Amino acid sequence: MKEEKPIAQNTNELFHPSPEIIAQANVKDPEAARLEAAKDIQAYWAKRAEELDWYKKWDTVLDDTNKPFYKWFTGGKTNIVLNALDRHVKTWRRNKLALIWESEKGEVRTFSYHALNREVCKFANVLKSMGVVKGDLVTIYMPRIPETVIAMLATAKIGAVHSVVYGGFSVEALHGRIEDSGSKVVITADGGNMNGKKIELKKIVDEALQRSGAPEHVVVIKHLGIDVMMEQGRDFWYHELMTLPISKNGLKCETIEMDAEDPLFILYTSGTTGKPKAILHTHGGYSVGVHATLKDVFDLKEEDRWWCTADPGWITGHSYIVYGPLIAGATSVMYEGAPTYPYPDRWWSIIEKYGVTIFYSTPTAIRGLMRFGESWANRHDLSSLRLLGSVGEPINPEAWRWFYKIIGKEKCPIMDTWWQTETGMFMMAPMPAQPLKPGSATKPFPGIDADVVNAEGKSVAPGEEGFLILKNPWPAMMRTIFKDPERYVKTYWSTYPGYYFAGDSARKDKDGYFWVIGRVDDVIKVSGYRLGTAEIESAFITHHSVAEAAVIGLPHEIKGMAIHAYLILKAGNEANDTLVDDLRKHISHELGPIAKPEKIEFVTSLPKTRSGKIMRRVLKARAQGMSEGDISTLEE
Image 1 (tube, rainbow, N blue to C red):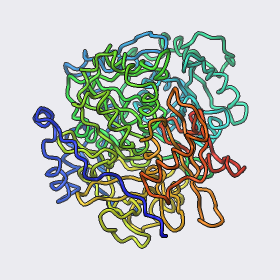
Image 2: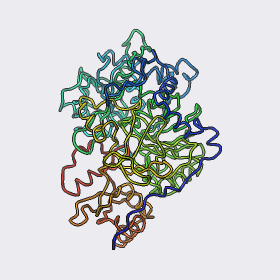
Image 3: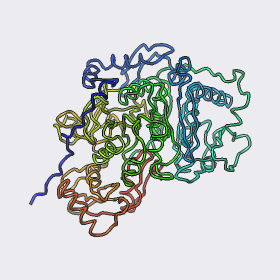
Image 4: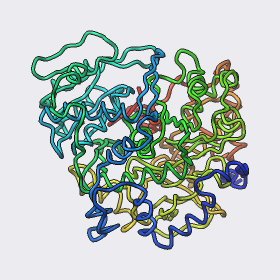
């Protein structure tokens, strides 16, 4: 008897926004906004660019004479700091809170736009005194503290290029990134707090620099107060440098005028194999893109308290902790530590304490907190929240509903965003004034033309799985891979010439809503059927005993590929053969017999990036006894 084909998600389930949400929305008719932008994409992005300040307006909105090396707002003069700080300190916003920071131990520091600008100017002068000039590379390897934001802004202010390396990376990963970028200065801290543990960052920097051509200077923030080795002539304490009369201008430092296409930062991201790629972004288009998307998707208002739980070391942190909120003149919350320290209600207590109105996190984090049940959230007043958001990998419907019901109290729409390090900004996301489908990233942002195609590049029918492509350039897009333009063309623009290939599989339903299934290399072909890992994992999580799931495909003599599942159980559930049988029956019921796993293994953790994406290729490598390749982006 022929086995049944797995069913897709429920594409008819709709959650409609309340009249109050629609009435206050920045974009009251998202469909009309998309249609209007599609009529003239360049005119649309020019209009969005007009919302920002420029030293000199652009001559050309889009230069596409050297595809795929697109350029935006050419001839324009700007600097991201012009819009993130300079324009605000000339207005009433100078006294508005820019940043509220809480350490894992409970220490609180706040910065108004005036105070943040003062610190940025002081540190920009420090960097200049060290010989850092326009175009130089600065590596930032830090915990989640305000000085990370200050260092990024100070680097950009003087026209240098920052390379932020996540503070959980290993010696080898840091060494490789410093060496590849040719950094002139490394900025770090003595250490950071995470889950009650002290992470000794300066020690890791010292080991990394023993393996490479050392940068000229290392600046060290005293955060934990632990003893560290300070090399004479190379290493300097941040707090000492910030009190020295380095510049005759004192607390002032002019922002360097940059061409719109001048580099702003590089950020390393792993491919499926091999050496990490350094993605390069520029000042002009990136500023326009992150501001437009944050303002429209998260409906940002002056009175909002915005909290993105990511780390500044990832693109989510760059775009929606640092630059996007500051350009918008928002007040951001930043927390140093783990969501479950010392108890699983730490995040909910922070929302209550600071009156957070918009909360943006990852499906992995949400699923992790689901394991502890509803009571930890229900003991806190979360009534300040008006919008929720999801980022990282596709959010499974079960986690979506929990997030909506328990955290949002069924009144907060969830903005499920799909985008990449390479795109710089949201590519697909809902807006608050439109109906939502749990598990769907909804539709492309205005000015973005996305499609789902087959192997020949032709659009597939509604409901059919295919490959996700972007058919037109956008302002915040990466410009190239640092030092490797050939890899840029080959990786992103060669599979479907003329189109950006995202590397994800997806389907589009009859209403035009997009459902991202997962990475193309995360699709399992069993007996001729293509099964998305995200779809199978979502089915596992609908079982009452399962908190998190990861599935991979391994070679099988008969089926071609067989499904192997790695599950984390909710507290109070016992792993045994009876549960395994029950789970296999559950998957068969949810997706069809073809999706039944060959093997189920119960684990206590999964290999994940800090942004929450499960690294399934690492699971594959471990299962087959092969090299794990580049694992520098692993959280642990």
